Image (cartoon, one colour):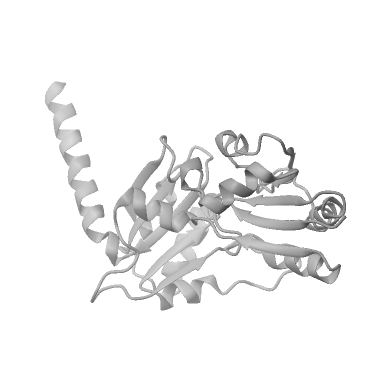
Length: 253
């Protein structure tokens, strides 16, 4: 028997943001290979499947990609519906190419089911569009992270060329990100929004300028950095609110 491997986007975290197709396939799945940060609520949509964690997390033990590839192929030879559940969208920073190429070379059928990527979920939380007529007509999705042995990333040039940028997997490199962009000519007062756990009830949002980005802190959840002039008004409002809070506190004292 030879089954199909479905690369399914789990979205940013909230289970009700999965597509109808994703939910259906999880219900039909014989086995689910899932990333590290997939919510339990999402995994419960696959009640009959064997669930195998194969996620990667920066700075922690993770499953090697070549081993994941082999396990997917082996599973497809004994199961009809194999789901590879990936955070966000499989085709954006999800290493989907490697899995598709490996399985395709072995004659195993692969289908991709898109998911909501973090930049779209964060924009929904903020209620601020990544684009704006007359002000922001281009968006760059980038990551400063580079795997061992891979060529150097040109993420800085991409950010400089776009009106709005979404920086993935950069929470542990805030100082380096700010220094690289400012050093390349990005204005230090560029508005920044940092969203953690987008789409989830505990989602947090912080606004700052690019120069102040290193002062922000996270709780360790999935974090996205957004920057561009579309966040200028929200940055001003956040600053005004902080001032009001300080004045209120001083009056109470």
